[in-house]
Image (cartoon, rainbow, N blue to C red):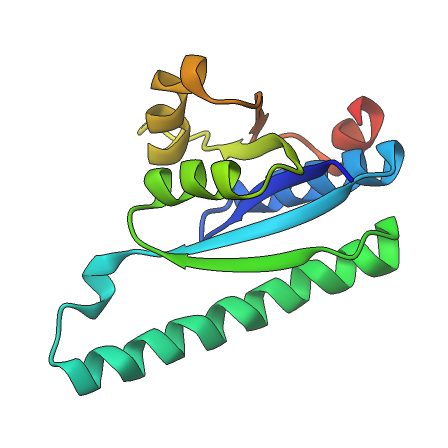
Length: 151
């Protein structure tokens, strides 16, 4: 089954990326894989403290995932899967695409602020020519109605 890979993070634009991926998956009989990446700088502490922080980060991610997963199941009929990786986000996204041959499209949300579309969109756009799948970039300020009309 083809899957849409979408990144779970704390950005505002993440919401539209999640919606887009779920709606496209529902309309094309595909799946959704949600990837959360824990950056390595979160654990630059003593070993015991780092382990506790890692576990807390995973619990936060799983709680955040459940909110999106419930909406996807209830509203779109899509049952997403969660993957958690540790490392640099752009690198881990590329590695996940390589590790899972069912991923057919990477969906990213673009920020609308003065700082630009965001670090992931900026980094991955530069290497998009070498990726084995297309990237869909979803504007962070699209309304739910507009997302529904284009998916």
